Length: 421
Image (cartoon, rainbow, N blue to C red):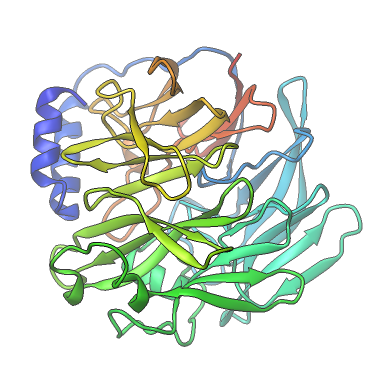
């Protein structure tokens, strides 16, 4: 963002609806100008009609020979309860995508995060699904034996050893953050009429026994660390949970909104120590949007520190020691994925010319390198009740030499891969 854009953004950022309206009008003015050309440092290989979703888990198999993908089966609209999403993977050969291998289908999905399809082990994947449009579950599928196992709760992310999963209340998430839950089921006991319920929050699920336990409730979270003055009148929920590299910590976002006024969203980054059964809260100022862990148990997050909205590296799991990264070169929100412990990729939302950018960032030197700039057409812009936008959501492979992302620069939603070296 330039200085004027940043000034306007800072003025309206607390009102989600007003911010979206101003952005839409601003970008519409620039629609009269000639389109900018797509740019990529290296060739992009893509498959139209496919996507993966969020940036926080890697779609690449443990040996980097396969990449998971979701295949759309409906025209461009919001999904209904009966709409299937096909699940599968592409073989990667010579840095290109081969044929799609179908493995399953699901009715629990959205455009932002798919169905949380991810690798559980070398040959097993896990994803969310719905039974009889009422019971939200997750399923483990072995791509070699074709064996399917049903887990009696949905998952968000899984531990690196494949034994545990983080989970929370998807019904509550969909109500307070539309487009991130699922429209295909009616979850019971989601306590939607309670602002700070004590029976739901962040859960740890055992994928061997099928049991889950509540780690910290929404009511408990309001008593940990400092809260804004209006938290008592807001509706609270948890989202965006991830395991640390050593599986000792589960990080997540604690959020609360005023459902009946501006829907202004407040966010905190929290890490839960599974060994000490203790929560740590990052010293941010009311806003955290996206983050990921690296292999050194550090977190890179886009958040507000003081009066700065910036990329911040939290140097240890208790989140108290941190450094601001590449500011003000990077002063707009983005979705991160680590290449190695000191380097990550991140994207931007479409700018005034509707170009979404992909960057490589060095934490040590603060150097920022542009890897791609791709058109994001107006038709894919989310509206109040149509949450169908397509962010790049870059995701790195295990070797750190290929990035997978979603894009609409061809005019259709597509899964893309690109070498970065």
